Amino acid sequence: MKVLFVCTGNICRSPTAEAVFRAKAAARGLGDRVFADSAGTHGYHIGDPPDPRTQDAARRRGYPMTGMFARKVSAADFHAFDLVVAMDEGHLRLLKRMAPPGAGERIRLFMDLVREATHRDVPDPYYGGPQGFDDVLDLVEVGIDALLDEIEARLAQRETRSA
Image (cartoon, rainbow, N blue to C red; front, side):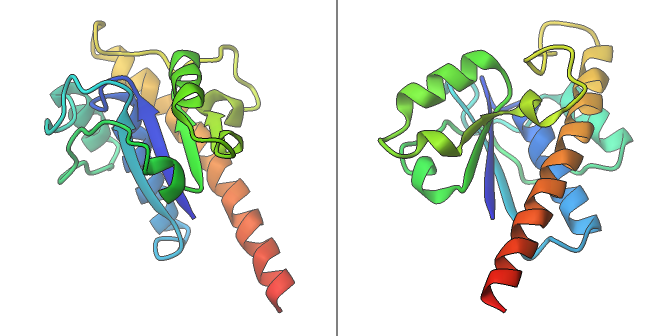
C-alpha cells in the first residue's frame, strides 16, 4: 500500500504526515507492507528539507525527518500511489483537477480520516508560531492512527480473500 501526503510546499504538513506514518507503521509491524511519501502542489521549495520548525516539533515526538526533501506532485504520482491524501480542501481541489481519469477515487482529504474533526483542513503552521507545528502533529497523529487502522483492515481483507 503506497500513500502520498500532499500540502502546498511540502515542507510542513505533508512531510509531518509522512514521518508520522512511517514511524507508526513500523511500530505496528507494517513497515515492509506500506510506503509513504509526500509532495507539494507548488514547487516553491523543491529540494529543500522540511521547515526547521517542523523538524524540531517532529524530533521532540520521536519522528525523524532525515533524508526528506520537498518535491512537487507529478502526473506519475496518480499511478504510483494507492492513496493520495490532501492536507486541506484547496489541495484536494487541485489534486482532483490534476488527476487523470479514473484516479479521483484514490484522492482523499486528510481530516476525513478524523472522526471527531471539528474542521476540514489541517491548518498551515508556516506563518504562525511554534504552537502551530505541535497542533499539526496532534491532528496528524490522530489521522495517521485512523488511516493505519483502515490499511490494516484492507490488508487483512486481501489476505482472507487470497487464502
